[in-house]
Image (cartoon, rainbow, N blue to C red; front, side, top):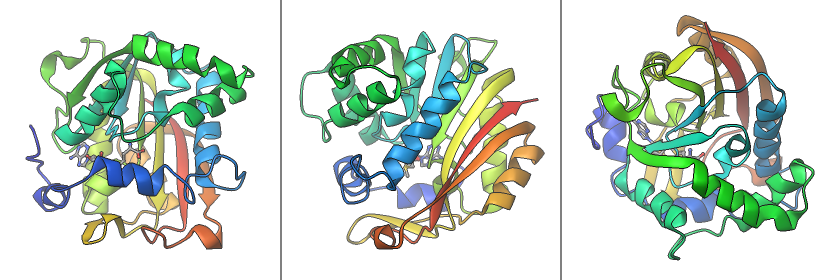
Length: 270
Ligand SMILES: C[S@@+](CC[C@H](N)C(=O)[O-])C[C@H]1O[C@@H](n2cnc3c(N)ncnc32)[C@H](O)[C@@H]1O
């Protein structure tokens, strides 16, 4: 499945994707400023913390769809699930995640401030971040290839036959899909990995037509709005529990893309 997506146009745009440049742009200030309450990162971490601690999301296995080179999206879920599976389309991203997992240095980003922030959300001392890092390393069972455009996005033996209890996916589906129909199909494809009654936690960009990782590499996106996300979820067999919207402050717009906000969805597979 490696890098031969059905949606070849978008797949080819990811050739040359540099995880270090992506992390630098999107996971360091000014865009990802954990000290600034109105910035995107505290909002995303708070949405995920709330979703994972409300009590309805539970089970054994959490699968992160299109992890990229990032780990923030499983920092709350690792306290709820005993097993976490990370997935991405690109080997360079899987390598970046493996470097963190093996804890032997060479990571492109220090995740400590993110771990500390999530500890604070959980009412723990920021210094508990070392315990959280150890917990995360303990529960990550593997880092595997995925293609959300395949009817069977993961290798057949990647999951137990019952499927995952929860999926989390951040900025993957809309950035991997050339149009709304492909976005909706991808939602249906990943839904096959989820057990009935399992939860989907989805974060994505609103109205984004491209993002850039480094000068010269513009990755086109399928711009979606809230109504389209809701309709696609319904069409793909999910019941919406909650949709939240974050509006990007004016001074944080246009740095690396043309988004005006983000959505967070909590949904359940019917
Ligand atoms: C914008 S990045 C998001 C990364 C990370 N989840 C985050 O929150 O920053 C989009 C990710 O989608 C992945 N991707 C692209 N095409 C894909 C496909 N067909 N199936 C699954 N993932 C894909 C890319 O490799 C990339 O890691």
